[in-house]
Image (cartoon, rainbow, N blue to C red; front, side, top):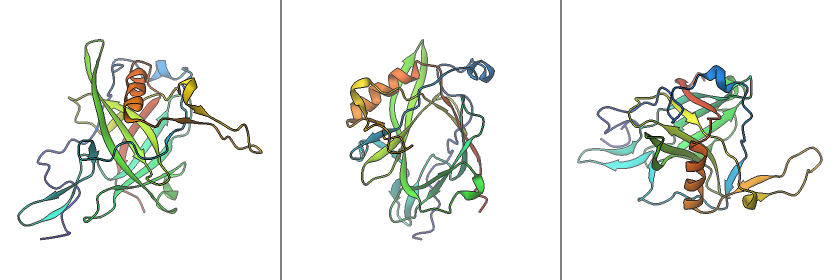
Length: 224
């Protein structure tokens, strides 16, 4: 068969992402509510993770009787909660197809509005493994967009979690990486320019040692 393989094909026991997933596993959400967090827009001029050596999901597969895209990331709607905001942001991730493997990405503050605008291509990236205070942590990122360049959401999880949830890491931009042109009317122009894979991974390692910025949680299949 061709073209009918589901995105999860080839994964006998899929890891769907749940539970708390950083070195701060024992920290209560209530303790985080009063934290001030840094959450800058991180953008690279070109996508940083592009090769077969990078662990990008979804990935293509070919077997004797089928081909398609396989992923450990669950398709559907995800709730994005930052600790210093009351209302969540919503994210939808859907498999693009079976010939070309990426996720269609939408985000909105209203779940019912997901899927209305044109999607952006995205990948989940397993960027690195670290140990913080004796705890093993996987560092993940969502790489959003391909041209011109990509934006990044920084995440972490425990390798032992069969999770529907990632910890969202802070994004405190190094001063040398800040780009800005002041305000354009009331519009912000500043962002964090990270243009090497290693630079982003080092930033992720630093952010994993800080209190988390929030949580990304799988909610269910798309409603519309």
